Each structure stands twice: as C-alpha cells, then as structure tokens.
Amino acid sequence: MASIKDVAAEAGVSVATVSRVLNGHPSVSEDARRRVTAAVTALGYRPNAVARSLRTDQTRTLGLVISDVLNPYFTELARSVEEEARALGYSVIIGNADERPDLQDHHVRTLLDRRIDGLLVSPTDGGSPGMLDAARAGTPMVFVDRWIPGVDVPVVRADGRSAVRDLVAHLHALGHRRLAIIAGPAATTTGRERVDAFREALAAFGLELPDAYIGQGDFQAESGRRVTEGFLDLPEPPEVVFAADNLMVLGALDAVRARGLRVPDDIALAAFDDIRWFVHTDPPITAIAQPTDELGRAAVRALIDRVEGRTGESVTLPARLVVRRSCGADPASGQNPTAVQRSTS
Image (cartoon, rainbow, N blue to C red; front, side, top):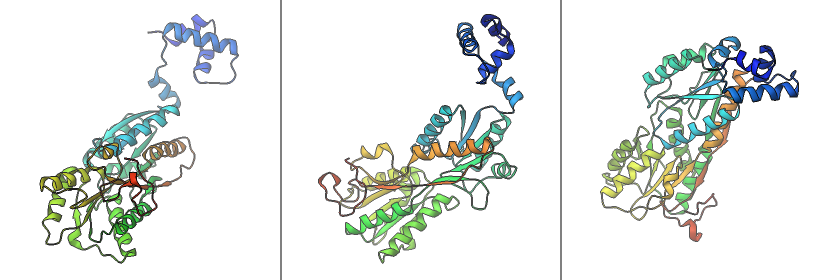
C-alpha cells in the first residue's frame, strides 16, 4: 500500500505539500495540486483515517441510533441521514435499537468507543441510562423524530397536530362519528403526542374519545391486529380506526380482512406515517405523511453544527394529510369534501 512519502516522491513535492493538498489547504499552487492529485490516483493512495483522526481529534463519522430498522419510516430516515452526511463529508454508522433501551445503550456505547464525532438518536421507550449519560456529558447529540423532555438536546421532528386535525375534519365531513385510535407506547413522546392530538381534534368537533376506543399498541403490526380485533368485538365498534404508525395499520387491515369485512365499506382505516406501500394496498390507505427526507437532512445539519462548535438549533417541520380511499373518499373523482392535499392513488 502506497504511503504519503511515495505520493510525495511521485509528485516531486514535499510530504508537507501532499498533506496540504489532501486537507484542502489554499496555500498550494495549482501545478502542485495537479501533480499530487495525479500521484494519488496513479498509486491508489488512501489516507490513514485512524492516524488522521488522532491528529485532528475528528473521525468525520456520525452515529445514528434508530428505533426500528424494519419500520419503513426509519429506513427512509436513515437513508436521508446517510445521503446528507456524505454530501457534507461525513460517514454514518447505524445502530438498530429494535425498540429496546438495552440495545440503544449498547449502540451508544459502541459508537462512542469508535470515536464518532456526534450522535443522532430516536430515543426508545423514553430514553436509556447510557444515552442520557452521554447527552449530559456534552456529547454532540441531536434527537430526531422522538425526544426526551427536560434533556438539553436539539430536536428535529415533525408537528403532526395540524395534520391530525385535518384528518379528523376529513373523517367528520365523510359522516364518521365513532373514531378509535391504536396508540403507540406511552413512554415515547410520539406515542403520547398522537393520542393527545387526536383527542383534541375530536373535541373541536364535539366528539369524545372513550377509553374503549383507545387501544394500546407498540408500533408493531401484531399489536395493530390485536387492538383492532378488540375494537371489532365491542358492542358498538368504531367506524374508523386510526393507527399511530404505519406498521400498526397493516395489522389492523389484517384483522379486518380476517373477519370478512371490507375497508372502507364496513370500517375505515387511516394511519400516521405514510409509506410507499400504502398506494398498493386495497384500498390505498389515507395517511399523515411526515417530511422524512427533510427531517433526516435537517438532523444531520444540526448535528454537524454542534460538532463544529456552532449552536445546532431544534427544527420542527409540518406533516400533511394524504387522502386516499380507505376512509370512503374518492380523490381521483374529486369526491373529497375537505380541502387537504390529495393523492392520485
């Protein structure tokens, strides 16, 4: 493997000049820069990242700990994080917490041992001791999607309250009055916030959210199926089931079909977190879409700001309602009584 001395000999310059070229230093002549670049290419030289990190105390590497890599929302989020980081000269190492605090702490410790420059976290189950210790110790960190109240870490997230109000207005205009929700874990901020937003939106239309119409899920499909079965067994089942994430609504759809019922004729379904699959279900599912790509990119920029000594501000972006046919509207024919963004699916 070629060394920096080999590159200097090939280019006919000093080792210091090679170092300046590789680090983008402006005080190098264009001729020397061209010769060094040609020598690097000819010799296949690769700088020693470990040695450079020891000199600069930076690895140009970020850590990302997500809650569930099998959830399409987090998969898309991870993709946008990696793309933005790469565009800004950083690499990303990803850890999957699988909604387990112990795994979250395992990944946090492992990433810190690898001397990452900063950490993006979507906290699982209200946080975990190791992750909280890292935040309090001053590790450059940004929460994305979820957050922990009282912890002084910037948060990059979507505000779904307005979109939930749009959803309830849409359902009300379609004539639905008995609306139920499959909630996410109460220990997560997103789990609590989506139930609160749904209850507030119902109240604005003079509707209540009875305890029987609140089912406790865990952001997994099986819990969506189980909760929906319970709703269907009620003496007066709901007319609409709103799942607080994309996987739980797929479980709800399975439960409805297992009873021989039809969506939306017998019961309507809607979800928080739009995913590409929803245009392929029968019927396509009405959902609240978070700006996943923008969230991932904004989170990276906020984290790099903190890594490089700048403030790194919190960012809140709006979510939006995407109307499809699972609640009884027909967007393609214009039979949608609410003025919200429509899908052509």
